[in-house]
Image (cartoon, rainbow, N blue to C red; front, side):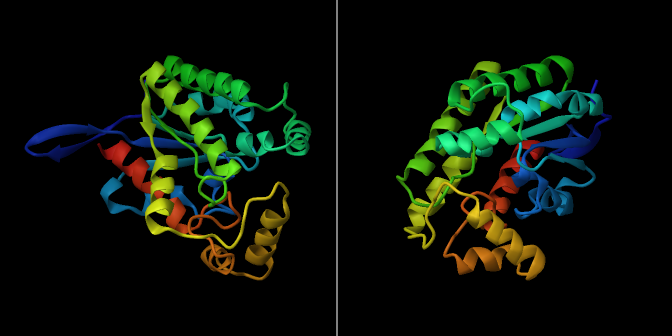
Length: 252
């Protein structure tokens, strides 16, 4: 059974509120090179007294998350949100990126959308079978901010896989990709930094943030970006979109 839930009065009725929420994901969830959406959730008075656990690990793909799922199951959370796949998308963009991901993450197979779908489906199946948690499956943030670019289209393709899994397994789908694409579309923004298949932007952003002490939002602004710091990790605006979706799910 999950962690003991709290109760909250709502319209004269007593609603059961979850107590322990685990946010499962990669570096976007870890919140070191991204604005920390888990910390944002923890600070929102509307969600008190929920306990948020940050279960993000830098650099992970869906296969890596699946391998460490036993630790999440042991927590027996009331709610699990899953935001995984950005590194799967990056790995799919070129043979070089795929080989690097396979080597660094000790993957059993070549990164691709079919393997991604299998791994995410296995994650959801195990969480459903071994916990009583409500599960929120987020679609992916945009990869790059050029609407219509190959990288943004790839993030949409992987997000479509996530939506299909959520519908098949009857868990809640949280449309992050759709919300970010809508924001960029309505705003008519023209990014000054364009997606390219290397680590230079990420490394440069880390140097600026940790050595030069620039804020993530300052780095994002200098690069002419609206939602990300390096076309992958989130600035405050991007992370707030994630936090808003999770708050709506948890409190709904």
